[in-house]
Length: 172
Image (cartoon, rainbow, N blue to C red):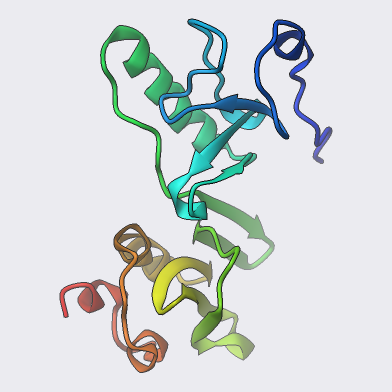
């Protein structure tokens, strides 16, 4: 069960923090308030995998990654947060894994056979791999992450060839 969909940011709003669908945080998780950081579901941020759009993602991994970024920035210069979003869900006999953000895609490529319940959908924007939805295709998910991070341009026929491991496509 999921409870709640709106971030609880009232105290930060009252203190004057900038907000838009969450408390705005920069790439080091700092808010517009001095020495105040925001991480996790309440934080909206400009994500490089969304072409710099201000987004808020509800994800355990995002919360952990942003917390690590904030902690590093508190104790030193730190690295900017810019991880590729990823999600997973087990639904009975289906293991669904997503890497990247498919918003704004202009083409898709299906790998595998949807009828068998083992397939991946590769999302492209202007020929670049921006995301994958993988159903019972853990290898595609693991190897597809490198394609998303590299914003790789791979010919569609190669992406569709389920017998060709995705890890071999980045080196081609």
